[in-house]
Amino acid sequence: MKKTHIFFMILCSGLMFGLLPVEASELEAGKAFFKKNRCMLCHSIGGSGGEIASDLSKVGSKRERAWFLKFFKNPKKWVPTAKMMPIKGSEKELSALADYLLAQK
Ligand code: HEC
Image (cartoon, rainbow, N blue to C red; front, top):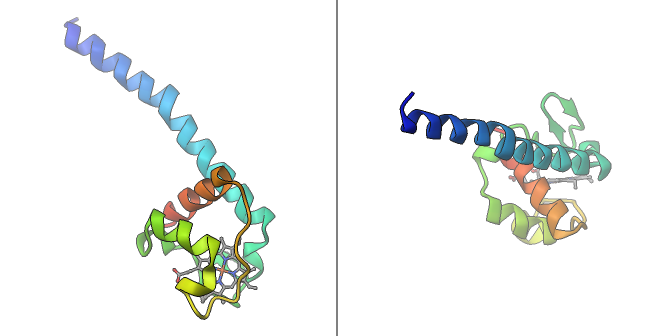
């Protein structure tokens, strides 16, 4: 086997076992935060939830990460119709929430 092949295999398994679980757990954390904070009282996502506010199932193709982070701190400033309280959470939680919403495409 060529050295480049071995290098490539190590790189691939590194991606599979190293990076992906981190990414997946970030999404899980965002999802858990979304559920815990009752976002689904008003919004639906992936086919379930409320109908008072917009369906967030495609919001990831409409908005960017930086936008979400600004929006969470002061929803009404960015979307005047947003009848939402500022979303409270640690930077890590809000970052995970942004990743979760960005994954809704
Ligand atoms: C009391 C009802 C209510 C709750 C609870 C609520 N929202 Fe909202 N949200 C709204 C309304 C109303 C809007 C503005 C109009 C729309 O998008 O439907 C909005 C807008 C948004 C938008 C902007 C959508 C866009 O791109 O225009 C996002 C993102 C969002 N909410 C996320 C959340 C998250 C995350 C939570 C939970 C922490 C949450 N909302 C909880 C009512 C709510």
